[in-house]
Image (cartoon, rainbow, N blue to C red):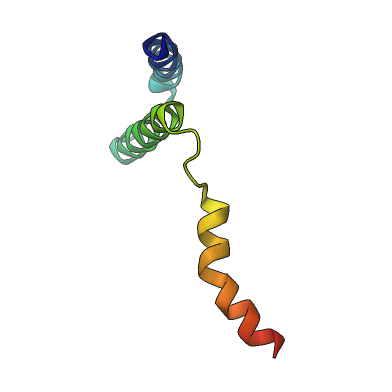
Length: 73
């Protein structure tokens, strides 16, 4: 049944793009919109299939935790 969720995500992204595309002027802006929308689409489908995937806050915490320990001393 997850394919129904993926279909819903695709319909949502399609409707958002159809609504926004005429309002975007300029080639660079359209490319940026398309790239960001595709990244968001991929992340949403990935999170649908792997819900325990760590988020960006956990990555930042992992990177900066040693620096915090160093500054405490």
